[in-house]
Length: 298
Image 1 (cartoon, rainbow, N blue to C red):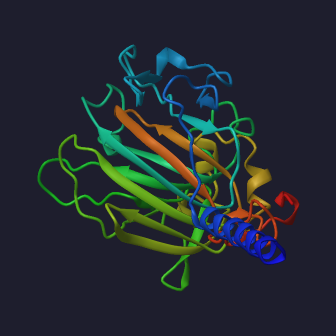
Image 2: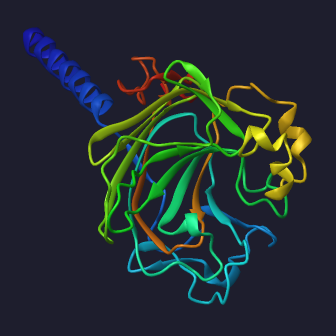
């Protein structure tokens, strides 16, 4: 009887330990888009009030998040972004996108088949009323124009700078090494964001760009503007940002961009890499890279 009890206890212990091990290795991806409504997102379009979906720019069609301009006569610099409700620091992001249709009248030439996802972004609420782009790191998405090469998942830096190839680089847009994707096919993009350490862009399973130390800059787009471009792009509180020059950005919001060319998104998912790293906790995950002791559950 004693032997049976010992065997039973050992079996239960081993089973629980095995289950804990299996669960800790299983990745828990979060879907940021529920395919039904925009309840988890906040909209901010330049020169429009917070959460006004101006001319139904952001729509859900057949479980796809579409950014469209069907009701626009002219784009009129109505640059818009839709921000997920929660800020993140260490995480993986993945999504699929495709361009479709024609560019909206009034859109800039360089915005033809051009959009993006902003990461490490300021919140929607902190945007100035007329602000075109949030201070952020942009994963720029470009579609091919039919002939010449045009990489996607590039880096653009509104109000920011990064260390690229071991030096502080103030170039506003740094091209990736991706292929060109002509046509309206779906393209799969992933990013690995490690707080203020490093960011990696991946397109169709190929690593196409890496950089480090995302930080606030005193120029919004170009150093040659001597700070005047903050005003040009509607950032009325530029002094608040300029005084933070060199401050490393360790976390921020994720925002989808509306930049004048119709684009669809689907499968927008996130794997949080920040969590409980205590192996004794029931919510321990082996893939966490940043410890959050307060998140542990015992």
